[in-house]
Length: 397
Image 1 (tube, helix red, strand yellow):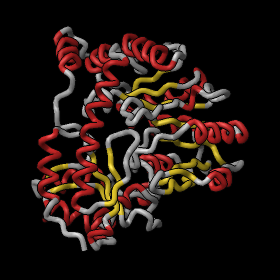
Image 2: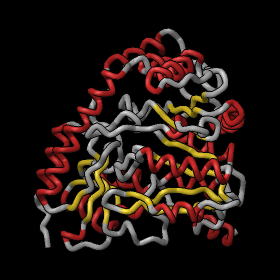
Image 3: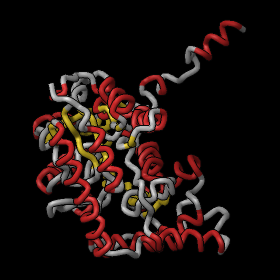
């Protein structure tokens, strides 16, 4: 009995898969922020209200009794609205009956996609730095992550390194554009090379597009699935979370060919059954927003990006100017630190601002993120101003 108790306490019952990754560092930093009453510029959630129209639509849906299970792969109204959005935004017609699966956020969309398409022992290419879920998701599938570096300051990849990463073992590649954490937006030339390699090696492309409408400086988002030969081999993962500032709603979706969608739907059904019914009704209404809303959204975040960039550079951070999403990667070496985790904890406890250590976006054995931290700027100006004031206590060495 004592041995069993010790085994439980020491994590002896953790699976071999679970032992290969840690809990989310991003979410951990939110808890640290709360413990120290620090301003949370770590986790990417807005601290301002969602659009009034989408909130009112959710209230109406609850009051109109859309409170029971929806169709497992999404209400017809939401799937129709997503299909209409795709045609309006990109000029591509998709079938809402056979090419869309509504999930509990893009997070579930990604793991459902991988579980539905990747086999144990397969290799999945991941660009590094990466959103922390990708590595864990691949491991949970029993697959092997294969990393390709994005090199600062532009976070471009080396063409030869990418070509060498593809092999007969490669099953899929994950592309996140606009990118978290770097703010990089993959350009057409880069995407065409990825597409060429996917076609050559019969590889699936999983395109995380959650920040598709948060773009700056006339940068263009090009969905990989719009390139020649990529329609049936690209799986797009998306959500209402970032575009409509409702990260807590957990309404995401997967867009894929009918054959892949059939597999994703089976996995999704047994993972979560379905996403919240009334919020799906509200999301359908949100998707009627068009180009004017996207332009306003980008302008809204562009002002915050420029404000925080200026504030960070003024106190001594070396920053990478993002092309999209709402994060800024910074170098901490001007302050005499070479340990991102220690610096992030110091920043939260002593300065009163929470950030994400850069190492959480790299594989555990890498040292590449040790001098980096990530700030998010999806906040009210008052929040960013308060954080900027606190950061003036930092001293450049």
